[in-house]
Image (cartoon, rainbow, N blue to C red; front, top):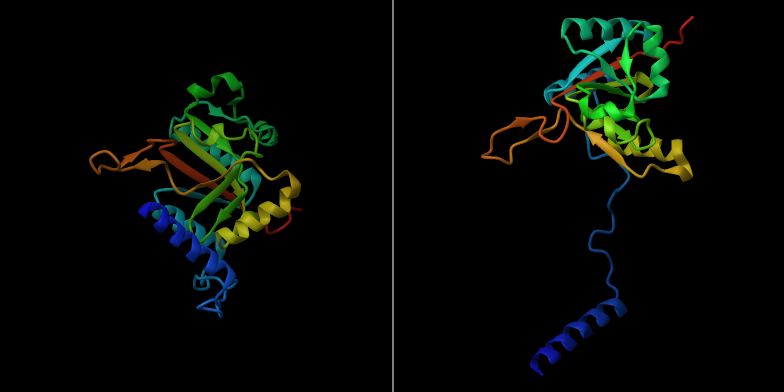
Amino acid sequence: MEESTSREKILKKVRDALIEKTEAPYPIIDQDSSVYKDLTEPLDVTFAEALVKIAGKFVYCESEDEFTWTLKSFILEKDWGVLYCLDPLLHQMLKTGGIPFESDPTAILDARIGITRCESLIARLGTVMVSSRLSPGRKMTVYPEIHLVLGYTSQLVPDLKQALANLRKKYRDGYPSMVSLITGPSRTADIEKTLVMGAHGPKELYVFLIDDSTPSN
Protein backbone atom coordinates (compact mmCIF):
# COMPACT_ATOMS: atom_id res chain seq x y z
CA MET A 1 0.00 0.00 0.00
CA GLU A 2 2.82 2.36 0.91
CA GLU A 3 4.53 1.69 -2.46
CA SER A 4 1.31 2.44 -4.30
CA THR A 5 0.92 5.69 -2.38
CA SER A 6 4.47 6.78 -3.19
CA ARG A 7 3.91 5.99 -6.85
CA GLU A 8 0.73 8.03 -6.89
CA LYS A 9 2.52 10.97 -5.28
CA ILE A 10 5.21 10.90 -7.95
CA LEU A 11 2.68 10.68 -10.76
CA LYS A 12 0.72 13.57 -9.27
CA LYS A 13 3.85 15.73 -9.23
CA VAL A 14 4.51 14.85 -12.87
CA ARG A 15 0.94 15.74 -13.85
CA ASP A 16 1.09 19.02 -11.95
CA ALA A 17 4.40 19.91 -13.60
CA LEU A 18 2.94 19.27 -17.06
CA ILE A 19 -0.17 21.34 -16.33
CA GLU A 20 1.58 24.24 -14.62
CA LYS A 21 4.49 24.85 -16.97
CA THR A 22 7.19 27.16 -15.69
CA GLU A 23 9.20 29.57 -17.76
CA ALA A 24 12.65 28.50 -18.90
CA PRO A 25 15.24 29.47 -16.25
CA TYR A 26 17.64 30.65 -18.96
CA PRO A 27 15.42 32.20 -21.65
CA ILE A 28 18.20 34.07 -23.46
CA ILE A 29 20.49 31.37 -24.82
CA ASP A 30 22.20 31.69 -28.16
CA GLN A 31 22.01 28.21 -29.69
CA ASP A 32 23.11 29.24 -33.17
CA SER A 33 26.50 30.84 -32.62
CA SER A 34 29.59 28.65 -32.60
CA VAL A 35 31.11 27.69 -29.24
CA TYR A 36 34.56 27.82 -30.83
CA LYS A 37 36.81 30.78 -31.40
CA ASP A 38 37.20 31.89 -35.00
CA LEU A 39 39.92 30.10 -36.93
CA THR A 40 43.00 32.20 -37.57
CA GLU A 41 44.63 29.95 -40.18
CA PRO A 42 43.35 28.78 -43.59
CA LEU A 43 41.26 25.62 -43.47
CA ASP A 44 43.91 23.44 -45.13
CA VAL A 45 46.58 24.54 -42.64
CA THR A 46 44.23 24.06 -39.69
CA PHE A 47 43.25 20.59 -40.89
CA ALA A 48 46.85 19.53 -41.49
CA GLU A 49 47.98 20.67 -38.04
CA ALA A 50 45.06 18.97 -36.30
CA LEU A 51 45.55 15.73 -38.27
CA VAL A 52 49.25 15.50 -37.45
CA LYS A 53 48.52 16.03 -33.74
CA ILE A 54 46.39 12.88 -33.71
CA ALA A 55 49.03 10.76 -35.49
CA GLY A 56 47.56 11.10 -38.98
CA LYS A 57 49.68 11.94 -42.01
CA PHE A 58 48.93 14.82 -44.37
CA VAL A 59 49.99 15.09 -48.00
CA TYR A 60 49.21 18.22 -50.02
CA CYS A 61 48.89 17.94 -53.81
CA GLU A 62 48.40 20.80 -56.24
CA SER A 63 46.59 18.64 -58.80
CA GLU A 64 45.30 15.13 -59.48
CA ASP A 65 48.42 14.45 -61.58
CA GLU A 66 50.63 15.33 -58.62
CA PHE A 67 48.49 13.12 -56.42
CA THR A 68 48.95 10.03 -58.60
CA TRP A 69 52.68 10.72 -58.95
CA THR A 70 53.05 11.14 -55.18
CA LEU A 71 50.96 8.06 -54.43
CA LYS A 72 53.03 5.96 -56.81
CA SER A 73 56.21 7.17 -55.09
CA PHE A 74 54.81 6.33 -51.65
CA ILE A 75 53.84 2.81 -52.72
CA LEU A 76 57.36 2.12 -54.00
CA GLU A 77 59.32 3.80 -51.20
CA LYS A 78 57.26 2.33 -48.36
CA ASP A 79 56.89 -1.08 -50.02
CA TRP A 80 53.14 -1.03 -49.49
CA GLY A 81 52.40 -3.61 -52.13
CA VAL A 82 49.26 -3.63 -54.26
CA LEU A 83 46.73 -0.88 -53.59
CA TYR A 84 43.16 -2.02 -52.91
CA CYS A 85 40.33 0.10 -54.34
CA LEU A 86 36.63 -0.64 -54.77
CA ASP A 87 35.59 2.85 -55.83
CA PRO A 88 34.82 3.10 -59.58
CA LEU A 89 35.32 6.87 -59.46
CA LEU A 90 38.92 6.35 -58.36
CA HIS A 91 39.69 3.52 -60.79
CA GLN A 92 40.13 5.77 -63.81
CA MET A 93 42.39 8.15 -61.90
CA LEU A 94 44.60 5.27 -60.80
CA LYS A 95 44.70 3.81 -64.30
CA THR A 96 45.67 7.18 -65.79
CA GLY A 97 48.44 7.49 -63.23
CA GLY A 98 49.74 4.02 -63.97
CA ILE A 99 49.03 2.72 -60.47
CA PRO A 100 48.06 -0.97 -60.32
CA PHE A 101 45.26 -1.86 -57.92
CA GLU A 102 43.14 -4.75 -56.75
CA SER A 103 39.35 -4.41 -57.05
CA ASP A 104 38.06 -7.90 -56.31
CA PRO A 105 35.53 -7.56 -53.44
CA THR A 106 36.31 -11.08 -52.22
CA ALA A 107 39.95 -10.14 -51.56
CA ILE A 108 39.25 -7.38 -49.06
CA LEU A 109 40.31 -9.46 -46.05
CA ASP A 110 43.81 -9.65 -47.51
CA ALA A 111 44.00 -5.93 -48.34
CA ARG A 112 46.92 -4.23 -46.60
CA ILE A 113 46.42 -0.77 -48.05
CA GLY A 114 43.15 0.72 -49.28
CA ILE A 115 42.02 4.05 -50.65
CA THR A 116 38.66 5.82 -50.37
CA ARG A 117 37.09 9.20 -50.97
CA CYS A 118 35.42 11.21 -48.21
CA GLU A 119 32.37 13.39 -47.63
CA SER A 120 34.08 16.23 -45.76
CA LEU A 121 37.31 17.16 -44.03
CA ILE A 122 36.64 18.88 -40.71
CA ALA A 123 39.48 21.35 -40.27
CA ARG A 124 39.23 22.14 -36.57
CA LEU A 125 39.32 18.46 -35.58
CA GLY A 126 41.53 16.99 -38.30
CA THR A 127 38.64 14.59 -38.85
CA VAL A 128 37.53 12.77 -41.99
CA MET A 129 33.79 12.26 -42.54
CA VAL A 130 32.76 9.21 -44.57
CA SER A 131 29.39 7.62 -45.23
CA SER A 132 27.81 4.43 -46.52
CA ARG A 133 26.86 6.25 -49.73
CA LEU A 134 30.51 6.34 -50.79
CA SER A 135 31.62 3.31 -52.73
CA PRO A 136 32.33 0.74 -51.29
CA GLY A 137 30.36 1.64 -48.17
CA ARG A 138 31.62 0.65 -44.75
CA LYS A 139 34.29 -1.94 -45.51
CA MET A 140 37.27 0.04 -46.75
CA THR A 141 37.53 2.27 -43.69
CA VAL A 142 37.92 -0.75 -41.39
CA TYR A 143 39.69 -3.69 -43.03
CA PRO A 144 42.98 -2.39 -44.53
CA GLU A 145 45.96 -1.88 -42.25
CA ILE A 146 46.72 1.43 -43.99
CA HIS A 147 43.87 3.74 -44.99
CA LEU A 148 44.44 6.38 -47.64
CA VAL A 149 41.84 9.13 -48.00
CA LEU A 150 41.53 11.33 -51.06
CA GLY A 151 39.95 14.71 -50.42
CA TYR A 152 39.73 18.11 -52.09
CA THR A 153 40.10 21.61 -50.70
CA SER A 154 36.46 22.23 -51.63
CA GLN A 155 35.51 19.57 -49.07
CA LEU A 156 37.16 21.40 -46.18
CA VAL A 157 34.76 22.78 -43.57
CA PRO A 158 35.52 24.49 -40.26
CA ASP A 159 33.36 22.36 -37.97
CA LEU A 160 31.12 19.31 -37.72
CA LYS A 161 28.00 21.45 -38.03
CA GLN A 162 28.92 22.50 -41.56
CA ALA A 163 29.88 18.95 -42.52
CA LEU A 164 26.46 17.64 -41.49
CA ALA A 165 24.70 20.50 -43.26
CA ASN A 166 26.58 19.70 -46.48
CA LEU A 167 25.68 16.04 -46.13
CA ARG A 168 21.96 16.83 -45.81
CA LYS A 169 22.14 19.15 -48.81
CA LYS A 170 24.00 16.57 -50.91
CA TYR A 171 21.75 13.56 -50.27
CA ARG A 172 18.44 15.17 -49.29
CA ASP A 173 15.91 12.30 -49.12
CA GLY A 174 18.56 9.62 -49.66
CA TYR A 175 20.48 10.24 -46.44
CA PRO A 176 23.21 7.63 -45.74
CA SER A 177 22.42 4.81 -43.34
CA MET A 178 25.86 5.27 -41.78
CA VAL A 179 27.93 8.39 -41.22
CA SER A 180 31.31 7.93 -39.57
CA LEU A 181 33.98 10.30 -38.30
CA ILE A 182 37.59 9.16 -38.58
CA THR A 183 39.89 11.04 -36.25
CA GLY A 184 43.37 9.63 -36.75
CA PRO A 185 44.40 5.95 -36.83
CA SER A 186 42.40 3.42 -34.83
CA ARG A 187 43.61 3.17 -31.25
CA THR A 188 42.65 1.89 -27.81
CA ALA A 189 44.08 1.93 -24.29
CA ASP A 190 41.51 -0.39 -22.73
CA ILE A 191 44.04 -3.13 -21.97
CA GLU A 192 46.27 -2.21 -19.01
CA LYS A 193 46.11 1.44 -20.15
CA THR A 194 48.63 0.70 -22.89
CA LEU A 195 48.04 2.52 -26.17
CA VAL A 196 47.58 0.06 -29.02
CA MET A 197 47.32 1.30 -32.60
CA GLY A 198 45.10 -0.43 -35.13
CA ALA A 199 42.95 -2.24 -32.58
CA HIS A 200 39.64 -1.71 -34.37
CA GLY A 201 40.75 -0.45 -37.77
CA PRO A 202 43.74 0.92 -39.71
CA LYS A 203 47.07 1.49 -37.97
CA GLU A 204 47.94 4.35 -40.29
CA LEU A 205 45.86 7.11 -41.84
CA TYR A 206 47.03 9.23 -44.77
CA VAL A 207 44.99 12.13 -46.11
CA PHE A 208 45.91 13.32 -49.61
CA LEU A 209 44.46 16.79 -50.15
CA ILE A 210 44.13 17.95 -53.76
CA ASP A 211 43.81 21.68 -54.32
CA ASP A 212 40.82 22.24 -56.58
CA SER A 213 40.39 25.91 -55.71
CA THR A 214 41.87 27.00 -59.02
CA PRO A 215 40.30 25.48 -62.16
CA SER A 216 42.82 23.67 -64.34
CA ASN A 217 43.45 24.99 -67.86
